[in-house]
Length: 382
Image (tube, rainbow, N blue to C red; front, side):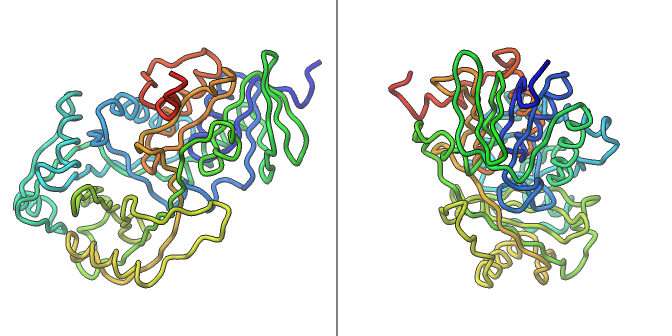
């Protein structure tokens, strides 16, 4: 008879990556437990804010493109399995100087992977999308498959389907410590001790505390988003007529815009936030921060920058190079560290969940995970 606290795998942290991993493990028929100290989806971490961007011509590096392409397939599969609309295709604009990081990086990924794209000069961009105004000398790469994901609904969907497939989910439960050996893993919580063959740690900002022995060089960054009511021409900025955009407004400084899906036009600066303690009280958005975002939005999407409807903060958990962390614990092959994503991970979470399930059950992944290895932060371990 199987003990009620024995599992094939335990997933700690049920945000974007953990909920997806739990879903993939459960739908493979494994006996799995998911644990979260909060009640996901929640406002304490990285996965909230109504919408997230998905884009394919990935300026950060071409190595991400095959993973996001698999993510697109899995988002479609999740929609079919759940009957929910989880993705809206809007197209996307990568706007900036022609020699800038954003435009050149997106163009490189598009060319290397044979992605469809169109390059637009400022007047061409304005004719196609009249709500946008960009400076002379800028260029835009338009990619047709970009769009919006709905993070809270996606987490709810992954968890609901995981539970339907037999997963046990415990929320409001805090993990105090864990151990691992050849016989499996042991997880101690304030609700009891559980055991499993494999352990996935997907706790985002709280990962360093669970693997203190690794001295992970991660920083937790406060991020900010605002929602604006267009001052005129609201149809220009709704999801049926407007693309998502990522804009390099100064050298290596970026902000993103999200078309209106019922809450206003969303905008946020990518990075540039303060480094904080994830357990400390988080400062709400200030009037000065709202004014800064309003001014920046007005310079590129002028009629979108009306009154502020709402604002929110979230957390980025950043690696030094802003690439992901997906790897096994160097001392315990059955313990998997899951993706501090440096603020650009949600779009991949369906595929990363599958990758984590593969690592836990098959011992490997079809994707090249070397760019996301722990060894790059620990040269002595290479």
